[in-house]
Image (tube, rainbow, N blue to C red; front, side, top):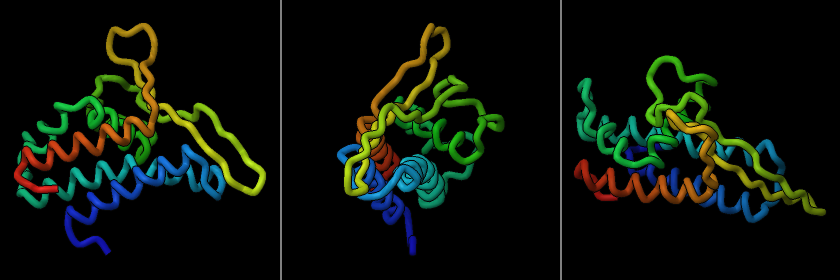
Length: 159
């Protein structure tokens, strides 16, 4: 049961921990690993909604969104979450200004005994770039947590 934004914040931490486990190899298959990856980014977007509700940020020019947009990790996480939920990003402009933000599988290592490790990269092409930029998804999850911590403090919530 989720009671308030703090519960979503803790869930985001738990999902980041799972991404680390997936990278390092854990029991289970690719379906669960992919579900945890998608859940991390959709949880980021859920936290945004919960924090907005907590501080009464319901106006057109969102204070929470303004703080989030100061961090590249949160802009990329937002765009990935929207595409994870809707497959395409058509209702709003991408925060990264890239229409191709996605998490793609880099490698999968299957071990005897049903464990597997997965490595993913978050990829997007900024305007004017000749090629997509890539960042390790686990490293991105760490950056997202740090950036969210700063956003929470900036809007008056102690993480």
